[in-house]
Length: 170
Image 1: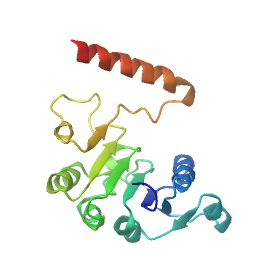
Image 2 (image 1 turned 45 degrees about the vertical axis):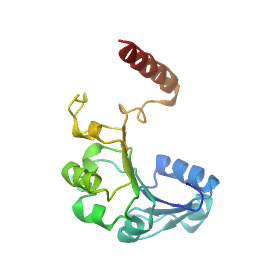
Image 3 (image 1 turned 60 degrees about the vertical axis):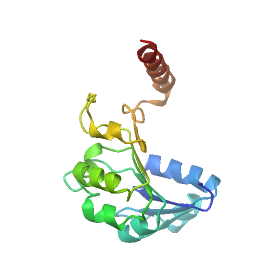
């Protein structure tokens, strides 16, 4: 499913670059969009091609967001951008939730336009048991694990697994 599919990366900072290297190793075509284009040497190093935002959205099977939350990036992905995405594409947001318009996202999921969605930071923290995203079988929500320092990651994953096992056992 990954080989020969296209990954669109919004923001080629440290995390976007690491993702690009891994995606290329899986045989994925990697395209990216950000305000400042990488140098030719960096594009070769990360096996990535700069494209306009509309092309990234329409050509990608997977779109991964790596942008800071600022007034300029809030609702950066809204109804119009979601409509430009390839039908059945997957959207992954490991940045801040509010970069993607929540209402427009729910509409895109309900209509079946998006193949799935993953979010590492919730729109409301802590999460709510009645969060509408929990009704979708094609949505993955995680408790902001990507922001943890690497040395804390294993401990946090252990706590998460122990907590899940206790909740499921009761």
